[in-house]
Image 1 (cartoon, rainbow, N blue to C red):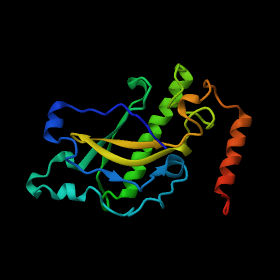
Image 2: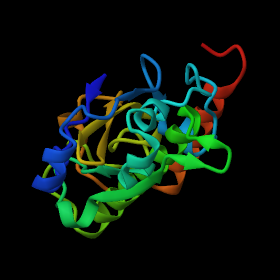
Image 3: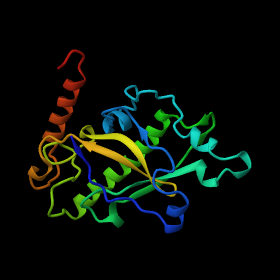
Length: 208
């Protein structure tokens, strides 16, 4: 496993001083996390421990009812993919911490954050198609021999940076060391079909 070396997310000085790093809790989605295919394609969250826990409820309880800060009702999740131009691939999106049924659960949070990470992945893939970079590390691909795919990217945790800004901790388990990926090209139809067959084999009960 590798830690995806994102550019560290930032916020305004005023917000950083008001709510410094660690003021709000980090949230963990299991020891290994959950891969993006399972989370965003198969929509499965059964591997998340204590999925019905409400990790931000205590943040609300820090403040008297009359002094609850408006910002405590949401967080901003920011993803900054490494080795890509920030303006083309950065994704920042609010996540509401109160739902119709109450405080957001770990499962609901994982799905929301997973959707934001998926947007960043899609933007990185599109950017790679439009202007292939010289580097090969951390590039998105549809077939694992050409780069990172949904199966190998894991949402492990979510950390408070400052203000109301959070950044997900992403781990990757690539098919090879990132710098060894071949020069990027789009996968052929045959390669996509083969990748699909391999995925079906992985999902077959009893397969090791």
